[in-house]
Length: 276
Image (cartoon, rainbow, N blue to C red; front, side):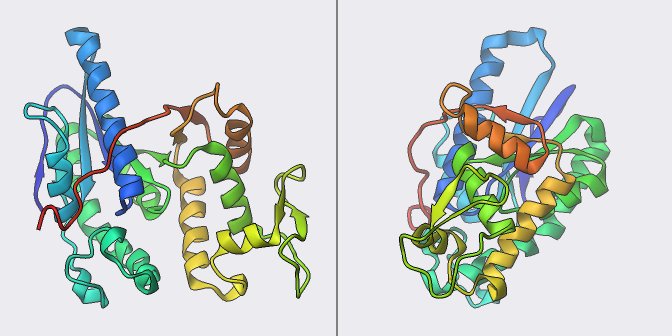
């Protein structure tokens, strides 16, 4: 496990995105935003060390996306996709065949031991009160790990507040549609009675019609539930001006404090093919 950090008196924030471009990019943009804010504040504030955690190929791509001299650090977690029946370069969803997505999602849980080793090392050296994990919604086990290790934890939602609230509500408490149902049939959400979804939209969110026996949906529900039970708050890629209702809904659903930090914009990171 390779990692590089700048140590000293301050706080250490570990950013841990899911292994997909649509998640790596917002996390990188957040790191850039935090770096810019730290530069503007100068030396009067306690220093914030930001480290992005990912697998080797993703870290290589992320490094190419930051300029020389950047204070953003990186930590590599070992990952062997071929051990899970995946292509050897499948460290991001852009290199994973669609049929293998469930296997890829399940395999990311095996990042837990090296991640906990990294967090424990930092907490022991820098003090547990000075370490915070900001993790992707699809990495719910990080919230459980952070609590066990005595460090702070927050969730970063890359997809905005309203869409996340509606999606999580459908995953956790699916509305009951008749069988068979027409594509235009509508049902209200259990958590938000004023929000109605059509059957065709519902199927798109739950992946397959037989959602009760869907292992992928069960995984996603478990990840969300772990965050809601063990994390200390939601950091969301949106703003109060853009999504006041969405922020209210996601806060109500999760029961967690919400913090809007967006919108965060920027380009893609180099893919695994670019860094091969």
